[in-house]
Amino acid sequence: MISDFFFPQPGSGIESHIYQLSTKLIDRGHKVIIITHAYQGRTGIRYLTNGLKVYHVPFLVVHREATFPTVFSFFPIFRNIVIREQIEIVHGHASLSNLCHEAILHARTMGLRTVFTDHSLFGFADAASILANKLLKFSLSDVDHVICVSHTCKENTVLRASLDPLMVSVIPNAVVAEDFRPLGYPANPAENSVKTRGPLPPAHPLGPHETITIVVISRLFYNKGTDLLIAAIPRILAAHPNVRFIIAGSGPKAIDLEQMLERHVLQDRVEMLGPVRHEEVRDVMVKGHIYLHPSLTEAFGTVIVEAASCGLYVVCTRVGGIPEVLPQHMTTFAKPEEDDLVAATGRAIAALRSNRVRTDRFHDQVKMMYSWTDVAERTERVYKGISGALSEEEFYGSHPGGGWSATRGRAGVQGFSLIDRLKRYYGCGIWAGKLFCLCVIVDYLILVFLEIWAPRKSIDLARDWPRKKPIENGIVDDREDARFPASARVVRRRSGRDGWRDGRVVDPG
Image (cartoon, rainbow, N blue to C red; front, side):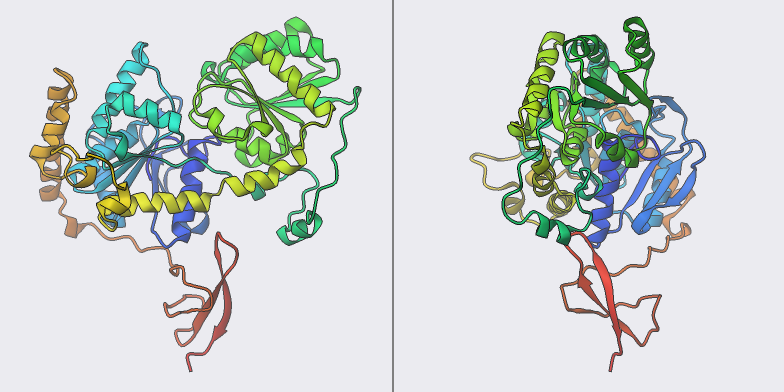
């Protein structure tokens, strides 16, 4: 897994997606490492939970944790890591991650399979989007498969990078529902099953004079709708005297938000918490009744799933992939306009006061809809498809007249020969195509030089984190475990869907 955006940077989107997906793939018996850039106080190699190894490469960060594009200088480090860890598939994340795009180029030059996951939506008219789309087209011209987090995101990515829709899969984000429980919800699932057996008792309606708390947790940037939020808050508070806001997050728009509070003298009704870590998000959410998400563009919106899991009624804008995320009874949609956002918030407040919305049921429903284990299984299927473990019919399904272009090879899986790669890049534009071909040729020459200057046999292989492969319930695992004598074997039994735990130690005799 490779991306510029990873922990300790605060965020619940790309960072959490990479971590949770990697952890679940490890639980399924795969070896996973993460490559990202160095953060303050965090360089070199770090080990996270479950033996997940993270390489923090010391590159210059230029804007919003994205590294400075170097194109070729990352190649020697990347090659060394790939050979040391015996990597077979490189999975990049995020359209604006330079490390991701460079890694896909270098991986294809080294003969590795590649996957790209797009987490964002981009336009087609402004200069920044045009440049980003051209960069994306460069990277995805030679990628084996693409994953998008929503169908809207898939449509956007296919148009931006001129992809065949058959080589793009939709695998959404998920949420660890146990980490986002409402107040009073039992931590023990068995206890919960006893308590919720049969029809739930009616929830207590909020009286006309009880305070309703609206929670906003977001990066305070323009695309997250902060300007819309600044305009809507005074009107919402003026129309509803018994409403208060809790706002968590940081960004360049924070100063505008603070100036609005001073101008309207709303400091006693709006609490600003500043940046919060992801593990603290639940503690903030359970203080509220409504979650307000005024984003102007969003591919998925993991935070609204977390809010619903905490038992909050969601008010959000109908943009991007947000309408795909939650069922209608959990959300009130608004146009990305000030008047409609104020009106939608008013409807949500009225629905809560009249007890028309059963937010006490949301957590169990979200838990059934989203699971990282399911995401890992679907991603694993993509890996098998591009590796040839699945046939073309199994992976892509039957498609009428569905031949693939001759330059793409079997079912869209890219060939590694240099001439085929140059054909794919050459079709990216009159001038851009020639530039891309030049980059590929230079990258190939650098690989030839590195193979001579630092041959593979001179690079030490890294030892894998000791672990056992997943086994079926009640089957004895014959692999050695460092914690027990070599003469003993460990019986491991399944503990829920998402993991394993060690059972009793038995003698081989």
